[in-house]
Image (cartoon, rainbow, N blue to C red; front, top):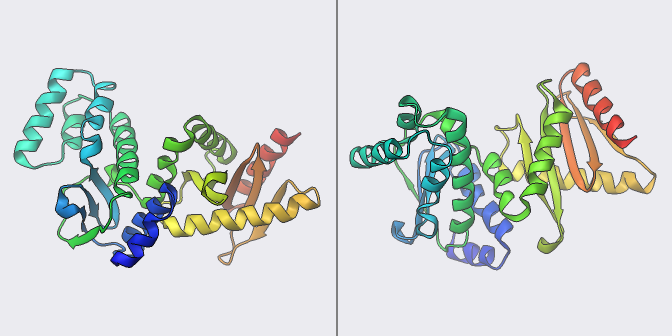
Length: 274
């Protein structure tokens, strides 16, 4: 990203700046490993492993991950010991914390996800990010994140309970049927942007893909509401069925490959709207 492009991004709001930062990972360096550094590293860093973000750090929030982990750790003293040992060895601490039973895997992943999303919001304000290609292969893939997952969880910083409720409703609508799902809120503060706040089964999509899906869904529902429509189904180019609906101001998109998936989702939406 050139200095001129980054200047244009900084003229936008925090959501647009975050999207631009994630596009560096998704598009400019798709599938690659390395780091994005800010201010030569003094302002922050993002580590990328095979196109997935595995770590982000900013001096502005340097202690918050440890605070999150203390809330879920079984032993504060052992937590501090593992942190110190891994820092001395230059190894990832996440796997060590789980292996020693200090935290559960789910608690660790959730803490890392929220920490990384919050850190990216801070780093998106920094000018002139620079990509540095380098081998990064020591992280457990399950503790790394695609950009779309980080983008949706960054929304917690703006909407909190609304974003959490949208994710819950999305999960209920999809059940365990294997469909892909997305949830969006409309943000009047950023030129009425459609902001993703929930995602299920869409790790292969880029942040740009998800944003385009949200804009298309909002446009479809805007046209449908004129004639009283509550739910729209369309056939995708790959033969799957796309289902779009609005519930209490939140836009939802589900992509189903099987008729049973589609029937389950339509029945759920119909029950909620009756």
